[in-house]
Amino acid sequence: MFQDTLVHESQYYELMLYPYLNIGGKDTTSVVMTIADITKSKLAEQQINIAAQVFESASEGIIITGSDHRIITVNAAFKKITGYSEVDIIGKMPNTLSSGQHDKKFYQEMWEAIEGTGEWQGEIWNRRKNGEVYPEWLSISILTNNDGSPNGYIGIFSDITKLVRAQKLIQQQANFDLLTQLPNRQLFFDRLQQAMIQAKRQNKLIGVMFIDLDGFKVINDSMGHSQGDIILQKIAERMTYVARESDTFARFGGDEFTCLIANMDSETDVIPLVEKLLQAIEVPITVNDIKLNITASIGISIYPNNGDDAETLIQHADNAMYKAKAEGRNSYQFFTAKMHEQVLNHYRMGNDIKIAVQHKKFQVYYQPVIELKSQKIIGAEALIRWDHPVKGFVSPEEFIPIAEDLNLISVIGEFVLEQACQFIANLNKDLPQPLHIAINFSNQQFLHEGCVENSLKIINASQVGSENVIVEITESLMISNKQQYIQQLDKLRENGIQIAMDDFGTGYSSLSYLKKLPLDILKIDRSFIRDILVDESDASLVETILDIADNFGLKVVAEGVEEAEHAEFLNKRGCLLAQGFYFSKPVPEEQFITIIKSGIQV
Ligand code: C2E
Ligand code: MG
Ligand code: MG
Image (cartoon, rainbow, N blue to C red; front, side, top):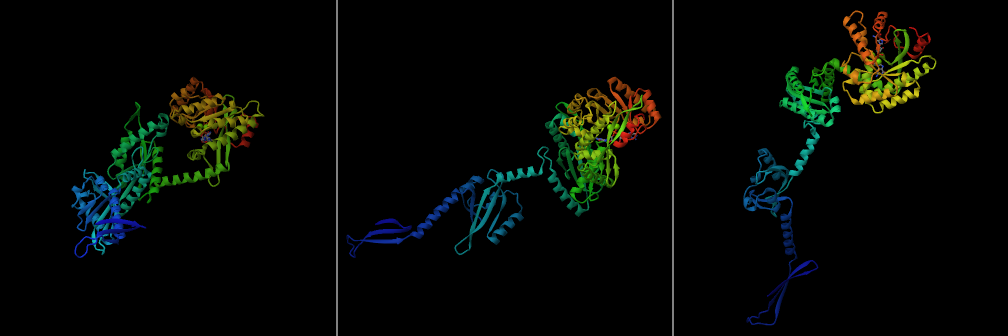
């Protein structure tokens, strides 16, 4: 017999040839040929082959069970992912793989879905043969017979360990601060919101702390940011150390941290933690062999007493933190309604200042500076004035700090400098002896780039003569002890400008900076002058300052001279210069011109 398969135009035929035997069984030379169309069965065979190849080479693990759930077959990827071989697994139940990470309910719902809709998909944690638990994305479908009756199940899964790991990392980065590993602002908000929902239900209180390190900026600037980072990490570690399970510390940004204290019965429940935290932070930190004493100021707000949304609570804790700073640092303050009022006022004032800056609504007043011996006016101090549309004149002591916060102080400072230099330059044209003009510079101004260059430009353009210009700085500039400031002052002095230390004696009173600083003048603060006639200690302090100034070769201006006797006392003790209401209050330009023209003698 002869048999062969023929292919013609995508059709398969089976050809068979066999000899024709006659009835007697004798051989003949005839043959019988049959041709059958076997296309259908040929194609079915091919499909089975393809399916088998797909099954074996798929990158997903495939597991097929009978309707009794026992495993019938698995593919190569299954073996690779799980570590089980056919011998290990065939005939077993799929729960051989289960990790114990899911509860009964999970599997119950899964099977309900499969029986109900014919399929289920989801993330499931299984266990490899070596014991390792891993996540997989699994889809299970029912296999059916031709008549639709269930025949078994097929599970197809991929190992998503890498994906889950990446997701975790992304989540970590989105919710945690990379430097300190503490929750970040976003996660803190979420937790606070969750805690509020729970507190409302259980009638509990929540404490929110706003923690700011004292003077950290100075440390960061002087020691460098990488050292600053180490300090922040150490502080964060201490926070984690004092925290109880229900407390969440978070890094809010820069040197600001927050803490959430959940489940409180009384406002005072927060105190033990705050005090423990302050103590923990206070312990000196050694960085690069330098022992640093770091402290923090903490503000506290309480839910629901001080607000019922996360932003308000944090804002109020922040306000209270500022109060703690103002009260002398290394301490804590609870938020009060009065603080809220102050903050609101601060905010409104800030908006008004912005408008005033835009429309140049400021004026400059001039207070004469007198040579005590001759009682002649030798110069003036320029003092800014702001006539607020509703409040009337607002003290510069009130609005300058706000302008500093808003980064508007340089614009304002340059405005005053320009006005004052031009005014005095014009006035000096008609005077035999030119007047000096003293301008107050805020510390913040020096932080702005080009501060000195811009100031020199303004001074030169006015033609007042830089030798007639005095820049007044305050002692607080010195705490940071920054070389950068000193360089700027040096540059001003190289250009002939004199430097005066304003309000001398009120600040840090460290005499060491007198040596380091390029100074020409000391201005004794008016609080010491006020009582020199009645308070002996003030009198001797002023005398000491005069001596020190003499030693350092500095001129002295006494501020706040309100009475003839003050002037007399100071003159007798060798003080050269003075200013104060006794001679004249600060006055507008026209009035100052009148004073000067009326013969200079006061
Ligand atoms: P300061 O530089 O120490 O100015 C002296 C302050 O004492 C002025 O207050 C002045 O009016 C006041 N004063 C003068 N003589 C007497 C007196 O005999 N008795 C009393 N009780 N007070 C007297 P003012 O003008 O309110 O300025 C307050 C502070 O605001 C200034 O203190 C200065 O630090 C700051 N300031 C004023 N103008 C400017 C400015 O243009 N720029 C900057 N950055 N600060 C300014
Ligand atoms: Mg001044
Ligand atoms: Mg002063």
